[in-house]
Length: 218
Image 1 (cartoon, helix red, strand yellow):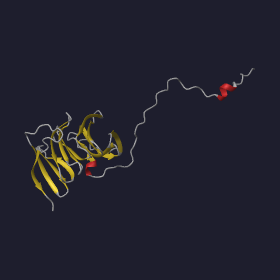
Image 2 (tube, helix red, strand yellow):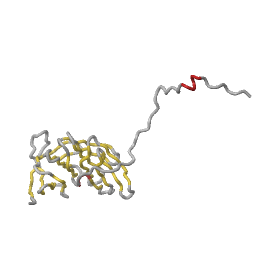
Image 3 (cartoon, helix red, strand yellow):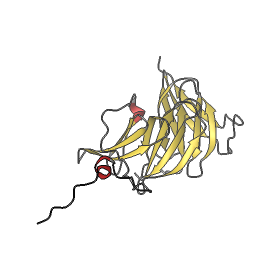
């Protein structure tokens, strides 16, 4: 019985050539995020329909399902997440950023796709809120940003704006969506939208939102 010839020196010492076209590599996906960067109450929100919890973790908004005790979805944005908020029908998640030229990104939860990006704040978004009907979103900037915007978020346009002088911790709409309330350092303010207000561009018409009443904590 004859044995096969030994391999040549060239075949034993030279590694095989790689293919001319590299094979596809599987994408890396996030399985779990440890820790959170939530710094205040606006960095955490609960979906009123599914009861899932959204919270900030770096540049990612994490969705956590308490019933399953696991993180179920991740939404990445360009800058660090400062605040999160669900729409009243539980279909949308708004994520505010902090840093230079931050945005507010709205995701559709049914498709996990970004459907709107709102730009206007300069340093960071401290708090956001959807109106109960879902068509309007209000955002408050950081203390040094000194800006408050009301958005027609589906069209990506600001419809009203105002300057703020005190730090705001949270903002919420009334059930009839006719007013929204800001609460912050030594103040609670009730805001009315001017029915004659128009689109806001830059610093023009910046006082189209009026304070109907204010309570100051001494």
